[in-house]
Length: 360
Image 1 (cartoon, rainbow, N blue to C red):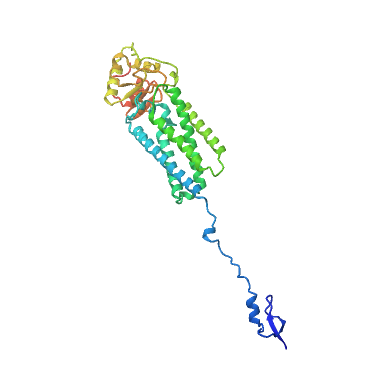
Image 2 (image 1 turned 180 degrees about the vertical axis):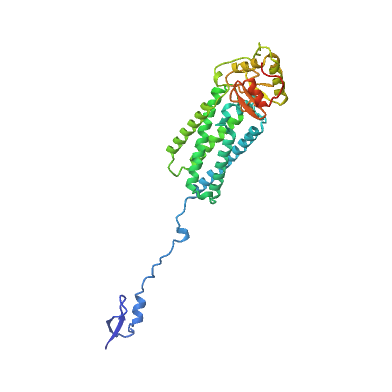
């Protein structure tokens, strides 16, 4: 006997399809539940984030290499910061530098005209540059938030720009050292150059995954060289006019006799600690001495800036360097600087001389 059963369609729950079955011995009829159990639907698809093991990761070698590079940069810059801090202290206090390697005194080069950039001590500039690189290197290595809203890519460019300028400046100073100070040694200069070049190459390695900013580096190098050339060309160096001369020291002879006024004024200048800075080869210094006369000159405090003579690479006496002498003669009276040949009446006015003797 034939019977009818109904099965639910998989595509719609609102329609039923009749299915014809023949009852047979030992066979049970298939109901709605049996059909749906045999035709199971696949499990529903899930829309979720990727599993942790399927996450896209940066290769460990790349991340580790960048972190290692930043730590190395910070370490090298830290050594440079300590060195330049020591040299800055020596410059500001007027102390003599300790020379770990024999040869000419390190102060001869550190106190020369080339140790200043527009009047700013070169070690101080280096200290600021090394400190900036060290601070940025530590921030990048520890992955901490950078100050002033600086991004990591911007910080890396700042490191590259600073190290590029330091390397170019070091190359420039090595050229000066070999040409202007031939035969002299400066262990601090060589150490700073080595550190600057090392920082430049480590910073370059740190940017190996990005495009190298060659244009920016060339621009920075050009600006550094232009700045240094401008600074040294515009500075009025006392030794610039004698760059190619070699003179042994000689004592100048004063021919004019002293007047009562000049002798009295010379004694007054000596009593208040006034000093005249000059050089044995300076014609204006000789004229200034002739104004006082041979007796009065002996009463003056005259500082000879080249007591050992002059030759290429010779630096001024330390007392003249500390006084920032930029031309001869130069008077320092009661803390006031008076440059060039000065009339005796003007020296009397500046020094507050009120003696009874008057210029003759």
